[in-house]
Amino acid sequence: MRAAFYDTPGPARSVLRVIDVERPEPGPGQVRVRVTLSAINPGDMYWRQHSTERDFQRVGKRRGRIPHQDGTGVIDAVGEGVDASRVGDRVWVWMAATGEVWGTAAEWVVVPSEQAVDLPDGVSDALGACLGIPAMTAHLTLHGDGPLHGRTVLVAGGAGAVGHYAIELGKAAGATVVTTVSGSEKAAHAKAAGADLVVNYRDPDAARQILDGVGPVDRIVEVALRDNLELDLAVAAPGATVVTYAAQAEDPSLPVLRLMWSHLTLRFTLFHTAPRDTLLHAADALTAALSEGALTPLPLHTFGLDEVAAAHEAVERGVLGKAVLDLR
Image (cartoon, rainbow, N blue to C red; front, side, top):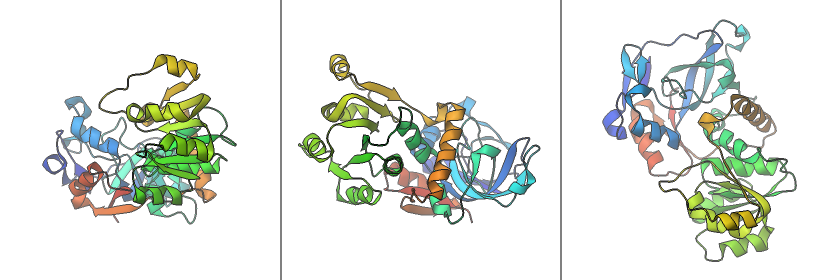
């Protein structure tokens, strides 16, 4: 079978190549998925650029990594302990390459059965491929601090993948959702996702627009704490929670007294290290949201497997939407 592969860290065009490797077989508790779409996340860029020798393990006869955590496909084989009726199921896959070296950028991937989640009838591969890290991260940021119904949520960067699903999941949970973006195209995308108010964070009166539009906010889903902390403090209600899911090159300087004065809670979450039962709960919740029609796909930018380097470069440029490899 064919798979994208790298065995040294570096730029996409320097280290990524497509090779032939032996098709994997599922072990106990595992399923094998014939991949249709392999989705690419910013975290895949980090692993490619920063992997060390201990991160590389044997892939067939070679030592290296097959990238990508997320994707969609069809189960074509199961391991011991997995119900054989799962063969033929259309699934979305999450966390394929966390703790492993075999990601979804291959014609087949083997994962634990619970990490291949059935796609409800009528849900497209395009939508399924957009889930995984972005949608599960959105769920982690929103649902760790009590009920959302009747609350007001600020989603920073509502045109991004996590932001998109934070808007949709927040609305599905009964929250009022305001989001910040940097331009008209992103504003249109965030509005289409269902945001009640969209504000350009570059506007000098951005905080006033939020307070006049929806009032103080109870939850903040934050992608850039260092850059946005002043805005967050300006619009946060007393006792609000700010949940950060991304790190910047420079850490923020925290105004401790102001945070204390507002009884503000700072919480941090990372998909890759979240408790397993939390992730399984998020996967179940996303399946329910799919069945209810609450989630929509991101704009897709589709590449062939041989174009994997170009796909990575598109992600590095910050393309709006989701870059995927089509392996059908």
